[in-house]
Image (tube, helix red, strand yellow):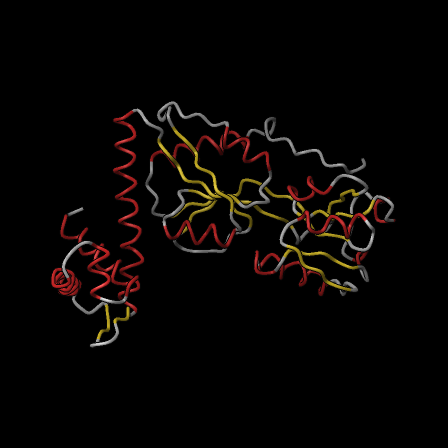
Length: 311
């Protein structure tokens, strides 16, 4: 990357954050005339304005937003490239930033952590946990190299491969009559109090549950919302509600008088994907993905976790 291109990207990015020439110049550590010249030269290079400005205001236009979005990624990748090279020269760890949904099947995380890459013996996987929508945002922003996400939204800027599929699970008190069945249908849930995750955590997934219930002409007596499975436990344990859970949440709930059954509904399936940016050309990330997929494609190694469900 040419030095001029780098300084142009730095100036445009900082100005887009500050929207004020003097503050942006101070933040970048250059004079205001130099910042102004960088922006002017950049706009000449591109062939049009990126900012709308007058004596009081500086505002990004649509072209500016498009430029700054890609400029941030370029600067981030440039910085990471330098860090990776220095890590190799210094014999330090090579970091790979991976995000995961908090309700990802624990087996997938264990498998990911167990990977060793001969070509990158000092690979260090930096794991973080966020909800799927936030994971996709961070991937697109370049803050993550890879993500393990449940039902991520579609984007032409992403590539994804399915790594797991499972049903929803229902948590209920062991004394509940539903516990007599090996699996539960939506029709069997009619008129009961349902506990669901907050819609903002994954709107499409939330809507799919209510849509399936509507199609089946089934409705709860009351809807209650939680942000974590643990919040639902006391209501389920006392027998006043039934909670919709993913596998990881089901494992947490199955204790002290609470049991779990799978939801038997073909359209309500949870699909988990390994996701990356379509333009991610990292050799470390590519090798990790190939190794990870080889491991989980071996059916003998990928055994379903045992839940407390009667045969």
